[in-house]
Amino acid sequence: MNRLPFFLPMKNCPNLCVYCDQRTITGHSETPSPSDVRAGASGIEGEVEVCFFGGSFTCFPKSLQREYLAAASSATGGSRIRVSTHPSCITREILSLLGEYPVSIVELGISSLDDSVLNICNRGYSGKEALEKISLLLDDGRFTPGVQMMTGLPGQTESSSLEDLRLIAAVKGNRPMQLRIYPCLVLKGTRLEEMLTSGDYKPPGIADSSRWAGRMIDYANAAGFELLRVGLQETASLGEGAIAGPHHPALGEFARAFALALSLVRSRPSGPWTLPPLQKSLVFGHGGWGLGELARLTGKDKEETESLIYWSE
Image (cartoon, rainbow, N blue to C red; front, side):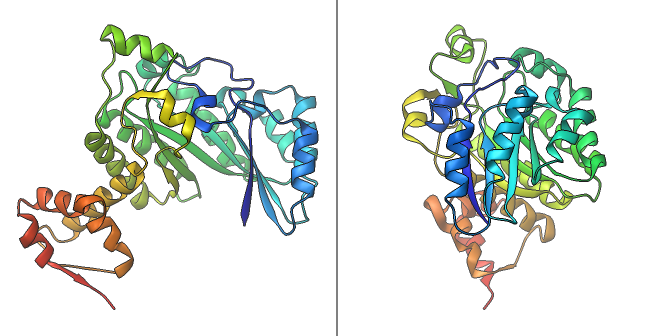
């Protein structure tokens, strides 16, 4: 199903996070009105997923939520709606409202569950509260939850974010859940830029960030998450606004390549390995990053490591 995204950058967010400037991230500075949404949704042929990204949708006044949802519902019959929101704005009453419309997926910004990290980032909720809201969504049963997690936040460690993912997986059980993993970048004009300048924050590099996200992917695959995206979509405004941090358009590919290397070493620590041809880009792409990481994990050189990889028909 094709997606029709509408960006509501930073609209009705209950807190200004130290790292956030969604206008820079998305390249969208104007907020579409319900009339704009209706015009876009009704003009699409075939079923579509109408998506509200960028703001905290369920933090809007209920009357405005209804206007947007009614506008999105003008899409062809069978179309669905996806909303993204802040955990603090999920209640049974809100879910009841969403249930009146063809909303199928509710994504929550769960950047971390570590209370010290959440406080530094000014997220406005506790880890316990976030898990409760995920449980509320899961137990409701009408929506597929999505969680948007982050790496490299101030005060965050790789082990703490992996523990966050384990806690979410424990709540999820065998129920479906979608996952996005975003790196923390330092954007111009944010509080995080001040923290960088003062020496209070040092972002991880591209390699470390890729391995961090790769370990999360590896765990998420085993825990049954549906992985939607790793890394931020590259835009001109992001390229201009990101002044530090693991900013690279192929970060997601690096992370997936490392996750593949981890899975191969776990299955056969010294090889050999048989892979489908579709995974060649993960092994050899971007200067052979994946091959190099596989070699590093096994303690072999790249030439020997490559000789242990066989490709299925």
